[in-house]
Amino acid sequence: MFTVKRGALAVAAAIIAFSSAAGLACGAAAANTAYSPVVVVIDAGHGGIDAGVRGKNSGVKESDINLAVARELAGCFKAAGFSAVMTRKSQAGLYGLPTKGFKLRDMKRRREIIEECGADMVISVHQNFYSDSARRGAQVFFRKGSEGGKQLAVSVQNSLNGMEGMRRADPLVGDYFMLECTQSPSVIVECGFLSNAQDEELLLDGEYRHQLAYAIFCGAVEYLSSEG
Image (cartoon, rainbow, N blue to C red; front, side, top):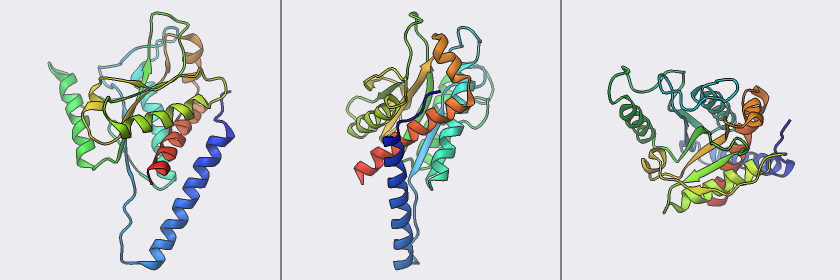
């Protein structure tokens, strides 16, 4: 089974411990000052009649894998004291009725959620598919011209690359709605290739999805620590 390298875990644990201690100290010194946690929007791509791609062997919907990873990721952030907001909390889409223009309505609703909660960071979870079934591994995308997005992508990609057995990759520029719809640092994380038998099998495993989510979380925390 894949695991995140101990170095990444240690860094994340130290940052979280330091942040918690700092928060307690500030609370003791200024009891009347409200603490505002970092708001992270976690976007589970697709949903409802928009299944995304499907597993080549199992036929699993990308939308279901996205939601499972997003839930794990939200749990990691919440446990560490962050405010984690999920755009999609169920298998349903965000478009209302499945009528003409549903995809645009779905995208607009995701943007509204990001704006309404005042997101400090956006992580959109997806799965990849490619004609060459040998392609595998996680790939992170960021918006061209966004320095914060680029640094977040580098941190998350490095953390994913640190998973034992993971194919190493570099973050890439992507022209996608979820990157363009906000000025906050945002990334799209393609967690694996559903066109690859090994990735597909791993993504169907709950323990692996948890480890994958934790690696994304560690990368995000690493980014926040560098910005602080």
